[in-house]
Amino acid sequence: VTGRGAFLGPFDVSSAAVALPAIGRDLDLTFSGAIWIQAGYLLPYALVLIPAGRIADQWGRLRVFRIGMVVFAVTSLMAAVSPNIEWMLSWRAVQGAGGAMLAATSTALVTAAFPPGERGRALGLNIMVLYLGLSTGPLLGGLLVDHAGWRWIFLASLPVAAASLLLGLPLHEGRVEHGRVRLDPVGTLTLGAALCSVMVGLTFGPIWGWSSGRVVGLIAVGIALLAAFVVVENRARAPLIDLEMFRRSRIVALGSAASLLNYTAMFGAIALTAVLLEVVGGYSPTQTGLVMMAQPLVMVA
Image (cartoon, rainbow, N blue to C red; front, side):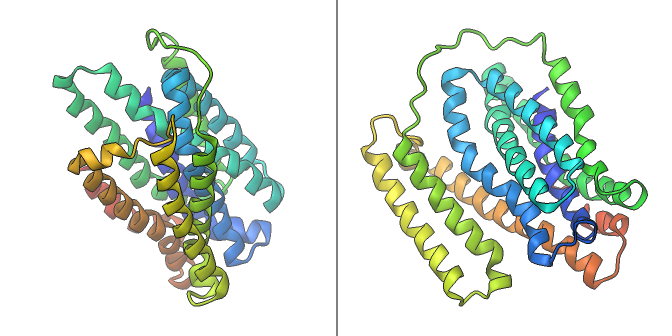
């Protein structure tokens, strides 16, 4: 059940990357406008991810997982019927929030459900499914774009979401202490503004120019806000992130740093590789999907 949640976000990002040129032609978008289709998903995803985990700890992870799955399914349908870019970006933003709820809870549910002796294998399977989403997304997305149209890459998520919800009906999480959610509003706003500034600056650096005032200013403001976030969290009564765990555990600190570098490189390359192959190289979406499968398939193995 949680594997389907882990599958959907990466599948959506990688399949949408292959469809960007087709979406751009259909909705009359420039290259930078088409890039917002990806950025419009990933930015809310990054902003909601940590607060969603915090809410799930207090309201129940299974409840937040189910809400995220419903949000993701509904917004996938609305993105599929988008008549213009404004409609598309609005629903992509909400879809990113739903994807963040799934990501924040799927691994946590597996960790809580399995005893220590089985947990490694269970987590390994969950992560394998995530990379299956990345590896099948480009090929299935390319086939759908070539033979059915780009709107079907969003509709393809609906049966996966429905199966997860139906199969998960008998599941129960156990006793959850319900109460007022303590979200650390100052920390949440500071982190959100920091991530927004850095991600927009990095995303549009190649388009606006790395030395332009907008890019340099956004990245500088983002770094300053991240430093302010660390100060705020160290003083907060109910911090959004317990920064002490990074100081206590070298594994947590270095593992998080490795994940940051890995996903920065991988998701940055996905969209640009698809556009390079299709627009510059003249490959069809299906051929592009086959080329892009190589890296995530090795990661699955």
